[in-house]
Image (cartoon, rainbow, N blue to C red; front, side):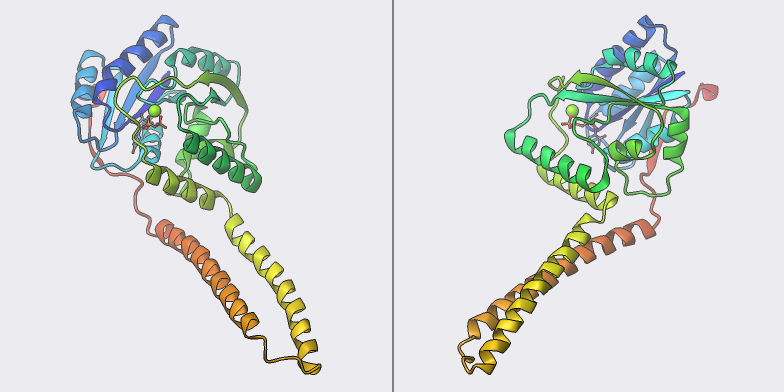
Length: 308
Ligand code: UDP
Ligand code: MG
């Protein structure tokens, strides 16, 4: 059986379409499936639509969070509930074409354990968003050796991979990178990002930026290493300046050097603060991990088959 995991946050207008498209395509291709909708604390009628879909088709299930915990939590909640031999994670807005699932499923049948759907085009996105995304992926690639350019959350995972992800103890997750990080035999398919069917994107720039910073720091210590490098460069600079100052002092030319003092103070001060800021950021992440808070809280779930 294939488990289809669909995170949904204020997607009332898309639930029926997504359920219909996915089940239509999978039935056509003779794939046995279940669909798990995770309502990520929507404020609209998403949950009612999930229950409606569930009433019409028992292969559809729903989980509702007590508040908005973010897509990461939703994906992992879905993974923990997936009963299939493999699972596919797909967006609710049909920007990930469900027509691709049979192809991904076939690759899995041929032995692939992770099937990544990569974006061949990024669809309609603003220039600033594109630059931001490219920079983010470049930093991720050079610092953590995970090539994520074009990567999406649209993936098919074998049971082995699902179990590996479910066993990860961390809570500050980044699904897109973690599913590459765990390894396993990976195949790729390409797709074009289509415009959203209904509603608008759930990511504000602020939310995305926080997500990017958290992902980079979650995967690499590069920012800390950059500080060390900057410190070394500054040390060399300071040594040269020190020698020059001493030479001037002994040749009796000193006293006019107030500007140097001020510059040095400023530089050292800013470097120290930057360094402290970065250390503070990592500390706060450690703090967050150490709290052992759950990744999400479930408010309710559709009944299991035996209860019906
Ligand atoms: N999503 C979610 N929780 C959130 C934000 C988004 O579950 O806090 C879901 C959303 O319902 C959709 C998917 O994640 O199914 C992708 O979101 P969206 O389409 O808004 O992102 P974009 O396609 O613009 O990157
Ligand atoms: Mg979308």
